[in-house]
Length: 219
Length: 271
Image 1 (cartoon, each protein chain N blue to C red):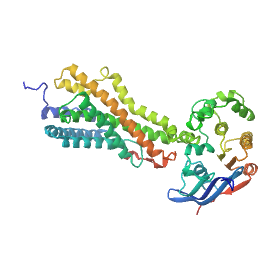
Image 2: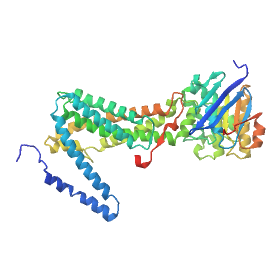
Image 3: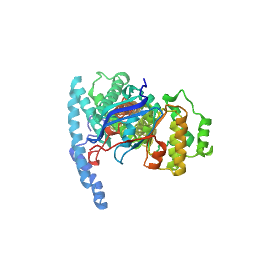
Image 4: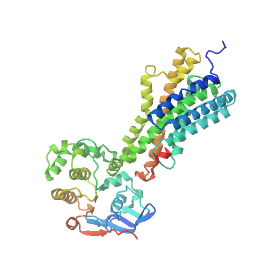
């Protein structure tokens, strides 16, 4: 089935916003194990493309498949469990960091899993944070720390594809390094895992991606 | 003395009552509230509408066939459905239909149950019972529906980030909307619960005082009031639940996506 190794495959993708095409004829495949950066001027619709790939927004034309199956045939909660989207602005629910990390396990899609405190502890240690971090009020954290919590929250569900929208926009250099560590650890755990980034930091793009896909604003 | 158990009000007395509005107008003028005009318009509308409905009701009460009485009932609930939507800040295509279905479903079901099962009016469509009972239920269902609908659409807009977080974590649309829906239902029910809490202590309900004025024994009037309050509570819960469920189906599509794009914010002039 995965003869060409494509996890996500978008063909002739087009999306209209308020009656005009934001992008059109976008073809792009994310193959197993790849690290791809999505580039394009601001306003070209990078975020919308990520949201479409995550199944949160609809395509106006074209087709999208995950592992060769059209996205329309997937049960969306299952699809989104495999394709993880972490938006530029992290969303924290009321409560502690631990409450936020436990949140996904209240959902039916993850009833077969349970929250693994020791795994999370080990992850936090890699980020240079101890147990006290779990008890902190998530809403009071800095934007950068919230971004890390959002990523840990998502990665514990072991997705196959990770879509990151400007993940280090609110991080300092140490934070950005911690984030890259997290993503590398996750990718290292299984050969097929693939990541798609958008980032305005060109040196980060060079470091974290094997190839760059350009999204041009349609005329 | 006449045979009635109450003092009828003639035109001269009505005009005397209307002079009370001078209090409002004077206050508005003195404090420059700018309300004088709307107060006068509202007074004239209220008087004209009530005098008119008095004539209509006299005509309806004389009818002894169910069809015209039910037609009036449909018209009343249709107006209630439309007014429920007109007080909301954000709307979507189909909102009027959703409100209409909820208002009618809830009020007809509950009023029908009360007429046939509780009070057991003969014949069941007797306008003297059907119209006032339905009217009171509609007034409250209308409030419940517009509060719940407003809260739900507002919640969907304000908490879009949280809803989409849940969806992207693998939540079904039901799981993602659940907190918003129960919050909307709670808000829709609050006025009814508050009213029941203080009824008889802080407030003497209009229907009960009306019956007492008309000569009914207070003990009987109180029983009617209890029946109507239970009717209102049930119908408001049903109506609010119905409209929130229908709105949920419009704003969360079958692909488990939140469709904020289907919501349109109304300018204040159209609320």
